[in-house]
Image (cartoon, rainbow, N blue to C red; front, side):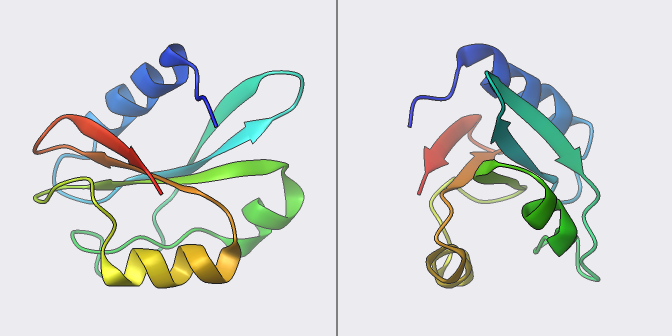
Length: 103
């Protein structure tokens, strides 16, 4: 999957507005790639994210996005488990290192 640079820049800008907690959203494809920001519903927003499942159901989701605040962009064990269960790629942005990982 080749996510356009403008989408990655939009995600960086969004993530930086949540510098103390994980931000999240989805990337959808409907004639072009679009980023849809989502509210993080997790009780522990500084370490986890949770997206309303209806967002996944109601959109043509090509990737789930979330940020890592104080760690690298590599997926955690929990990220890997959830991604493998969903069978949707995860795009992770590290605020600390200013880089992405597509898993």
